[in-house]
Image 1 (cartoon, rainbow over the protein chains, first blue to last red):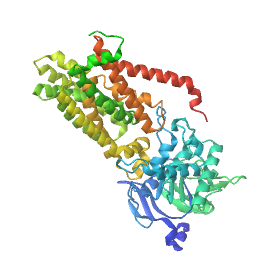
Image 2 (cartoon, chains in turn yellow, brown; image 1 turned 60 degrees about the vertical axis):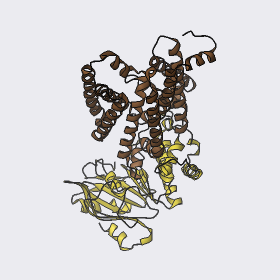
Image 3 (cartoon, rainbow over the protein chains, first blue to last red; image 1 turned 120 degrees about the vertical axis):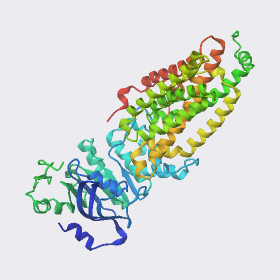
Image 4 (cartoon, each protein chain N blue to C red; image 1 turned 45 degrees about the vertical axis):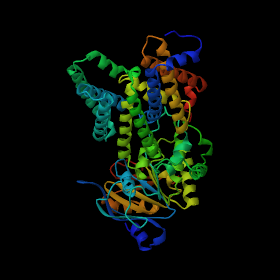
Length: 274
Length: 285
């Protein structure tokens, strides 16, 4: 598994967003996964794939500075990750939207920019404009004044994306934005994320269960399962040989006629990458 | 006192009494604070916490009466200590209700003990703490209420946006570097102070009429936080003023009229809202 190291071997320092070397994550006394090596470059669309409980969100928590690695090193924008970086836009998996409150989408998006500010100063015109621009960027202009509680799952994900983009981040962390979406809305959201990544040159890390809908868009994949992490281009990571070597057991990657793939032989994965 | 169709004359007649002026002044302050802080109580779904504070405040007030110090001082002390305790105990929000219930039960027991130890007028004191005694507010209480209201307004002003952000989207607020635990504790202290001054008007048991119902009603009438807060304050002001006025000319308690007015408005708004926007249309797609 030298793909990640190959990435490290040709460093373009000014454009590398994140670099992990022998990164080990977990809690005291419990390793969740270990020896992850990967880089994330400016403007890359990266999927993080793996079964439930494999530690995908743990990687986000490390990048957000909410959790320290157990071992190894992680560099983000050239330094250790720290909480509160305005260069990261984050969409967590769980948003609690109170359906009794009728707060409009626009307010949430604007708070993505101004919510950090203490004190009396009123919302500035700049905040308002930035929020409108962010909404426009996700095709959400017509959602601006609709209550969050009335939006569909796909519409909500667009609002959360706008909330994350409003501070003009260089790295987007999207935690399972596709869960609870039907196939059409899944496709719509992925093509929206893809166009955001390409037009703004923002790197995106997207956690998902199923890699197949993502395959057309991805630059890179980080695969987390059974305490181990593989990374690289999807067609390099998802081969029977590379996964068998990583897991030291017989793993088969199957392809169907439409280009979908499935992994057989890794615990938690029964015939499908989900 | 005779009620006449000339409302202005009625009002002048009522205003002649110092205790009514005090009641209006304290009621106005409490209504503004209740409508404002209540918005965040509703938004953060902290109704049960506000309830717990009022009962811890009851213990504090009863203890203060026993010791011969002003009841409001006891309430502030009791609810602040209780508030910090609850905030620290319930960092994991899934267990919050249980902890609050445990603290609340003990506080009520303490309050009962203090009241029973107090020899001068067991029932009267308990009654006024539980159901409010706005007509008994003294000028000194008004000044104290004014000072505390100013502090609460200042506190809300300073944390307004981070509080709003962490109430709406805690995970993102935390990732953005906001101290969400501190914001939570600070907010609970603001609630503790607000509850302490509100108890004068509504009493321990009717605290929600100013801290919850107006904000819950206003939520259905606006979608911008600022507008919801304004409507919430207007509702609690209207209810307090009208309640005092009606109570002056009837033999019935002020707190009853305040609760009845806000409750009626809430039901009215929900029914009208449903008529305008059938629930089936609220969730499409």
